Image 1: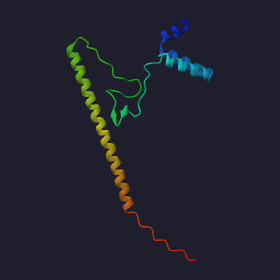
Image 2: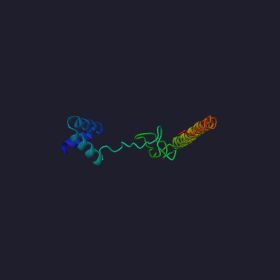
Image 3: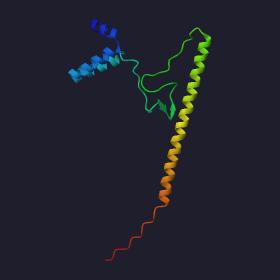
Length: 140
């Protein structure tokens, strides 16, 4: 237990380094280290659930506020004691969330316009395609 406390004092980088070292020495050892560190909660905080390219999406909309990629979660803001700053922070966060929503709507409109243009181009090419000549019956 003394060794685990020493490693925990260093933090996540130590667990990551030990896991990599374990994989380097023997893959079962590295796998065991990874499983132990994961299930013991020593690697908590490494959260990555970003199916979208730039932001975490579900049905084309961001999940939650201010999420983008791995480990970047919105934290609850406790009052600082300065009401002017707290109001400024709340207003700034609201404005940023509105801008993010508007930008995501803009990207969605661009995607739809591009898809519509490609589909219209396909249909125009399909309509203007020359008719293949009728096949002559084979003479026996």
